[in-house]
Image (cartoon, rainbow over all chains, first blue to last red; front, top):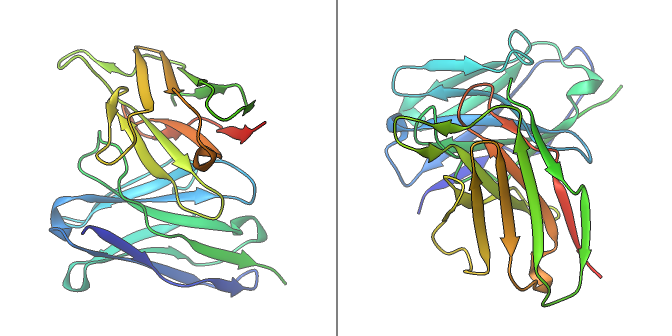
Length: 119
Length: 113
């Protein structure tokens, strides 16, 4: 079974750094892209960026370029989403999702990681 | 960026009724070299991640009930639920994966009347 398991809920203060994770299992990790998708409270879905763990090719949405960093560790089948300085506006649910190529649908999705940024 | 616009924003139907959700893209998502529409539909139940229902505009994902169907081409697409069940209460999203940034519609909230 293909599975994406995300790290747990985080509560942080503005200005703090954070790295959340998405561990993949059940398929060849280096052969598929992993995307990160943001869902702000009560809102819709926004693609943030995707990484191809095979060669670390990474594509960012212009809206998120420079705001976050996506990385992968092939040795432990894990993809990361990282912030260097969180803002209250980063409060959201973050999902990872697999896609087969750059022009392919997202399936499956991780269970989500809730990030709350509050002073 | 390709803008995806869904209609309606919300829908209240009775059990057993047919529900129709529309999705319009600001430019065509039909890839001419293979005649495939790069459009997917997802369902997000409360408190859950999105789940893929339909890809390539009209191909039902394995395990998705036959009451879900997708149609359309180019810039206009439709998701139809032929006979509404209680478990279909959710928010439905369309997504284009034709070009980055991949974009989603704003969502359509489906409720039971």
